[in-house]
View 1 (tube, rainbow, N blue to C red):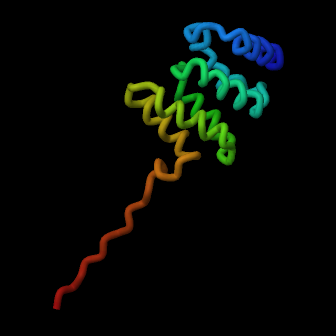
View 2 (view 1 turned 45 degrees about the vertical axis):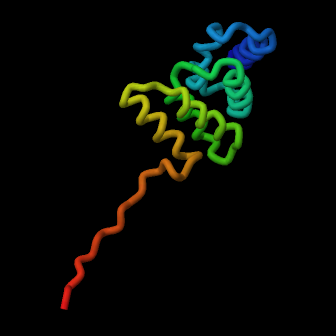
Amino acid sequence: MAERAAVIWRAALDVRLPAAALRGVGHFAFADRLDQDAWLELTAATLTQQPDLEDADHIAERAARSPASPTAELIAAAALNHGPADDYRRTETIRHAAAHFPVLRPRTVPSTRHCAWP
């Protein structure tokens, strides 16, 4: 079934459907049976035609499965750029994208030491 979905997705990209027709393909982030490399390729291709995908937080989560992939990094960056504005989903998008961008990872703050002044 996942292979058929990928064929249809690829066909939609090949005929260059209007951007609005591709908006919902962000839901493919939930398709665990869809090969990760195929998902990365198709999602990146979709982003060139329609950067404003639904479910940016889930897209970033799926991209985080491939932290060493330049394509996944591009997808995570797009999710950050075009992701949801509401607090929870935005926070989740950032959390998942952090796999690709170390600057987004939470840092531990070193403890401050009290100096004893003479």
